[in-house]
Image 1 (cartoon, helix red, strand yellow):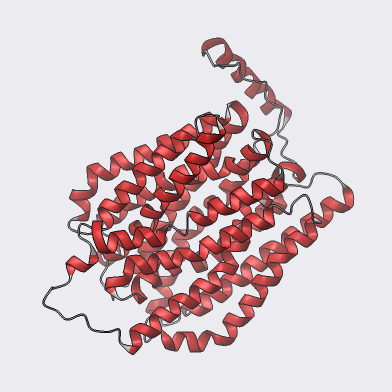
Image 2 (cartoon, one colour):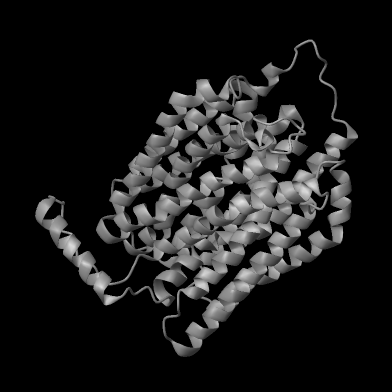
Length: 454
């Protein structure tokens, strides 16, 4: 059993990442709806802003990785990033449009400093041949999704049912809690991990040898995985754009009458006892569309432990799929998820009636299983394939896939009002399906370039 335990530092980073993702997904759950309802943006403009935001938060990790590797170290860079993100979330508490755009800029910069370096520190908790590494990243991934599960429920309820800015403020409070826990526990649980820039950790007397052929091949593999992950994430990131609008406009979100009566009784109690800026409105009997963004992390929390144990069990039996094959399965699953949405959209368009929420639940189930085949595996492999002096920067390259995918996702979401929904949801089916076939065709070659890392 001792071999199955993980370093205590994993759980500190798990907690920090949980609160950081709470803040990020709480804001993301409200962003598209806030722009189209409170700021009166049309879907094209909202999609454009959403696309730039969700893409740039994954471009700046290149800068964050470089600064950590060369100047600050991962530990300090993560702290700076968290503080900047906290300020960005609190800036969203103000209604002026200048605060809105300033907040997005702060969140983009802060995320870039934070994102690649916390993942790098998780990798440094394990030796290069430690069989717990893949399992550790899957547990870390649960932290991401626990925050993502709570965020749409808490921030979505506050934002959609009470006041948009209460929801954004709650996201900032979550980031502040994460930073406090991190500051209290880093020295005790992380030791020297992440304290120094990577270049200072080398012996200065050691010559800077050029990359070996195996190292060059492994870096090429990271680039290839980035290209294929773009196709996955461009489809997956529809969750915050077109799928949120589908939940808001085309999905039956009504609750039973007795629940509506109970909630309205509670709202009346709050209005009598709390001096809100404006009295709370009566509950209309529908739950917020942002709640659907909690479905994916809920499935992750349920399934991640199963996958974490599955990879260890298969590795012991020498039956674990190679990384290229895991990516292939991920792409196939995201194709199936969007076939479900094409079907749901056809029902909505043919009948004109709101469709059952089970369509979105089925979509998120397939998409989540695909995510577990790709995302924690990708994080683990980047930390393992990268030459030590380039680890943080290569982690930034990995997140570059989400930069491109986020822009594509925003552009697709902006087509919600201008394209038949069946055609819109068919686009991810086509490009993800083509990527899956290419990955299958070249999987053996890619595996050979990994030089024994599987």
